[in-house]
Amino acid sequence: MRSAHTVEQVRTAEAALLARLPAGALMQRAATGLAWACSEFLGATYGARVTLLVGGGDNGGDALFAGVTLARRGARVDAVLLAGERTHAAGLAALRRAGGRVVGEPGRSDLVVDGIVGIGGRPGLHAEAVRALGRLPGVPVVSVDVPSGIDVDTGETPAAHVSADVTVTFGTHKVGLLVGPAARAAGAVHLVDIGLDLPAAAVESLQAGDVATLLPRPAPDAHKYTRGVVGVAAGSTEYPGAAVLAVAGASTGLAGMVRFSGDATAARAVHAAHPEVVPGEGKCQAWVVGPGGGPEAGQTLDRLARAGVPLLLDADALVHVEGPLGVPALVTPHAGELARMLGTERSSVERAPLRHAREAATRFDAVVLLKGERTLVAAPDGRVRVNSTGVPWLATAGAGDVLSGLCGALLAAGLAPFDAGSVGVWLHGAAATRASAGGPLTAGAVARAVPQAVRDLRAP
Image (tube, rainbow, N blue to C red):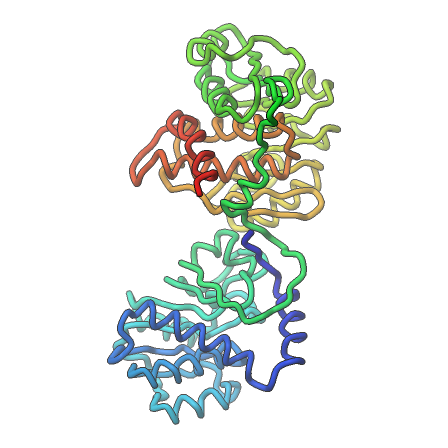
């Protein structure tokens, strides 16, 4: 599990560790990890030209002490001081002793170390920092702990900020390194263990081992009913393909049986593509409602909610969600759909996806799977997971229908909505990566690749 913590959690853990360590030891741990990552990025440290953009406090101190190590390895290290008297005095003195220079303006550089603002800073950059960055166009950037200027606890980027190639973070990931849109500004994230004792994470990201542990496995005496029956109520005369794709996601073998309920046009298309699917609304352990459902989706939702089993709602069913549904529920909107549900603008959701996903989970008493570049799964109790799998080619028509069916199958197989959404979106992204192989893909190809993505989890 990849864990991300808030600023308050990190500060508390750092204070406890500092009380047990000699003065300066924690900064030296961080600076050593930072210098190593910079050296790895450069490839050859000797003769490299490194510019440190140094803000105040410990973040600037980390950059200065890392500069000491780089200078001792033969790099030419220039420091641009952006905090005046608040510059870390011991770090600056050590850099000068190692041969580093203080310069008023950055010159030619092979690498920029962003030590402008740490986790305690407000979002945004002051004008002097913006000017310094502007004089280094196209130079790779390594950020210290977080890209300066992001909102560390929300992942929002409301003002000017650094866009890093690599972020070297200490002790734990911070929320803004995993959650968009700030996560994009972090580039590749390198975690340096500095020995923090941390509480439960504010945000988690499942890794392959976590998914393998959570994934339902058939018992030796399993049969199709004990493995779970998932119902799919989807499609319409206008959109029969949505039904076919939702059923494709449900029919990846993760549940024991799939039932389908829909109009005649959608039913013909589904049964032609998936002859193993059983028609009608028999007993199910979960229902998927909404993909391509058209104007009938509201009535279908009302009817199936009375069955008392978990529901997954997508697309046309989301229009009819006005409050808690009274059953365990997983809703899977994209930003535009969630904006309509909350009565706000799409751009607002895209600027602050974590805040809006949490708001919706509380308002509707449901797990909210907010689809996007960094898909979020938010539970009403405050837990959040962010997905790390997938490729940009996954932004293709019908991919969301496949995801709905896949997550619905996991609900029917016995996973709670939070785990079903988290595991489902991880497998969906992993399958897309495999199916894409670096190129375009279609939604149907994602569904076909799910069994192999599951087998990959079992590989030694």
